[in-house]
Image (cartoon, rainbow over all chains, first blue to last red; front, side, top):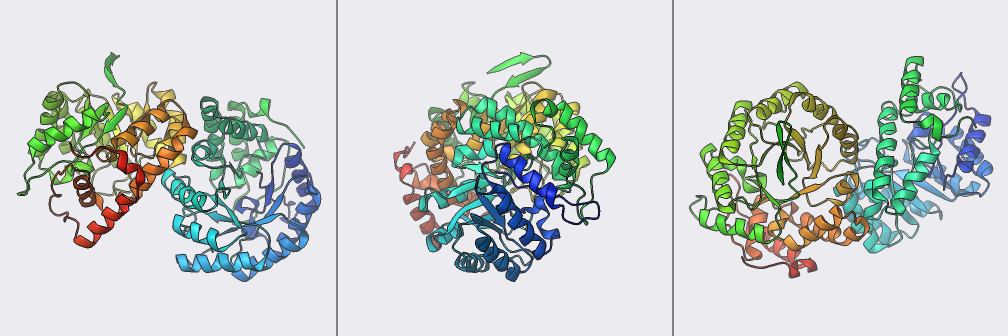
Length: 296
Length: 311
């Protein structure tokens, strides 16, 4: 599943025509779903009004060709609820929400938060577990199974621990209560998660190399582990390239792929010319220019 | 399994059991029981042994005892399986001395984690591991165990440097379980050193095997050797979807054992009919309430019923 970046003009204002082109590119390049705006989409650097405006654009442009989910996590819980209601109103297919920011909430507080969120809307809700970015705050296996039992529209998790023990803790707890609960990894760590019950992932590198992402997913689902390993090493190498000050270098790489999406909003830096050429040489070394689409 | 390749012996340890160290009531090493325990491990599918690991209370053994335990194990197993010596220490010279002893005693390899206590920065880790590697010609495995070592981690960059500086650095035994690290390591290290091995340091092997791990260190093999063997073989045959049920059973067992540490482990050994005594001070034996909780948690794991009881 692809989570598009957010294109900006040189003055850092939203670039709607490029966003529309990008959404269409992802659909044509084989995305199985669109989800926007993840942290990669600079969600926390957008105003609530901007988030609503582009959410409407995403639903309109994708036009039912594949599902669209909206990431509603905001610093203030009130804004999150507002974005969730808005997503439902505009006809999105679901929402995604991380555990609350900043407060290092207790398990009881996380539970109350998801109960409130899932009660606010009828749409399916995918939770987002990212302890390494949130001071260790996480949904434990036990809490996950309690939430599934309480909330009929709590249907999946974007899991970003990237750790065998955490993944097994959650998969064992969740799948025992709801066998079709969707275990998705935060980015393309498909090789280590699919054998344990994972069913897919969101993508970091999909705007650079959509073909590679689809090939990796297919190889894992077919259990072709030697091929999956080779593809996973490649995709993960790209993640190392983009991880630092994400999505700054990713946006730099998109310039090289003929799909420029403008600068990154501060406090993140915009990829310099030097950074862009480093990204270019790594993409060349991995053969990305030969195997992936150039331009829109 | 052991052959010569250039200057360095090659060791592909496969399924490695990591035995506890049995103690008498008085707290001495119970060698008679230790012998029986090692026989049990060999009869239960161990392809190598590594000892005394943390589960074997290495840090509570004196220097003399660590050497005695290794020599005893090598004599008892008579070359039927390779024995890997665990040589972790705070001081680099102490660790290096244990590594030198391991070679003299006839061990097949050595393993060491990061130095205790010092919360070492990168340069200190390099120096420490270089000193250990230089003290022996045996294959040297570095152990990544951040949860046991106050968060000190092995990084892919550190391994890159060690490959350049330590000719017998043979691989990483990983207890960190971090996919980002394992994938980066396996993307880089085998290119720089053909034959470089990633070994799963726990029974959570499926993801590691998908990434390219070829071996497994297991302490739980002392409790559930059949499940451990089944998981290992499915992983090695790359039957990863088929491995999921037994992986989940072992994850459940591991979770049940997690709170109790080595005291819980020894209590569970007694439940399985293989009494190895209590842990040494400062670790206390499990008190009654925790013991009852552990016993009922183990009772709830159905698959444990088909595991061997007694010796």
